[in-house]
Image 1: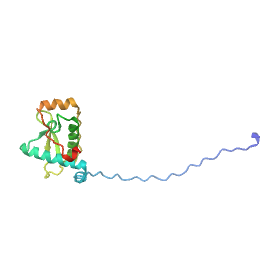
Image 2: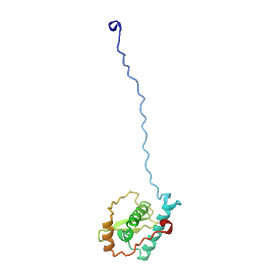
Image 3: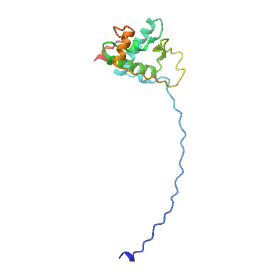
Image 4: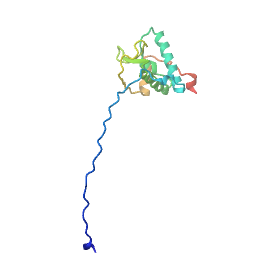
Length: 157
């Protein structure tokens, strides 16, 4: 039965494709200051509480930069040190504080004045390994017996 079937291959006709429209790239705009710190919630409460403490420590130290590890290390609770480092990163991102290298090569926290209002819009990144041994090392280096940053009562619940 097969020899009687007349099979012709289909003719391939190329389809016309629609021309692709090019989208113009939008320029990314970074806000001057995000509204995240203004929100009411337990996370922003902790950030605002730490910011108030940093302002007080900074003013009490004659507006001198605060050593980063002295600020974040809690010799009694490593998780508080991690939490402090995370909150400091939020404050740096919001351009409320800045990190700079000190004379000893270690990072220092400096309070940003609002008159400058983000002179550089560049995104900066600092990567630091943080573990229990490092916290103990800097607790001994700075002779930390009590943490500089205290948890608020709402944080502890």
